[in-house]
Length: 293
Image (tube, rainbow, N blue to C red; front, side, top):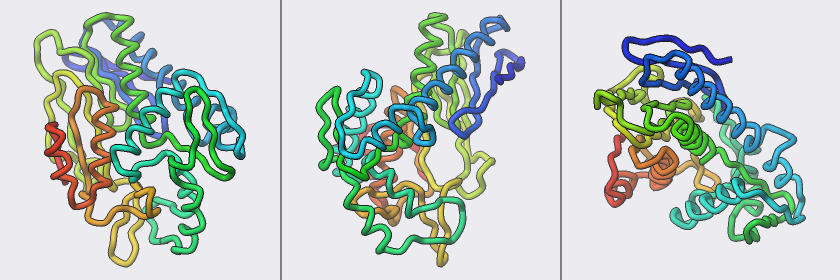
């Protein structure tokens, strides 16, 4: 259930979705409007989670993952996400791949020290690779034992969708939608003041290393501060290179990117992490604002 409180010059609504804290900041003095905006965002987040979470057993992802080689016809929203994921796979030369979800059978990123055996990963890699999939919109056909996982794009998509729904309902009101640190601002505030967003310290989660002033657009962060394996003195990020089944060596602890939308920011931050030690060079070539830790 969402909770809405009044701050000095805006309202803040909070709820939980997609296993993370969520909040909506609304630039208004109208409490009923703020509550409606927060409810729109919460309902959107819960709907996207129900539809695209790999943990549900009655949604399109489950139907795809249990098809065992049979073709599955998908709706337009799912098709759009599949098209976007396909583009990211191409842009990353296969490093990013939503068919890499089967690798979770090998990895548990709970802060522990358990590394999978190479033989375990080798046994899963034959079931990874978008080149093995037949995707001809609206029909998807995967080989038996292959699975998809929208975890790399779903939360950012939910943020942008919620912001768009609020905009459609209320016009040019300014709000900040924040789902677990992934952010979208749909319009500048009435007094042209920015929303201030803290950048979490990778080394000390829960504390901030700086503030970003955001008037409009999206912001997303990828990193290893909360989901990782720490073994033999080395920290392994939960972001895996789908070609090898292992985290990329030399990647930054954290990458934060500002872009036109949260979805774009999330894609760039994830692709940068997958570039390893070349993350800065990759981001500089995108001509976007970014912060590395």
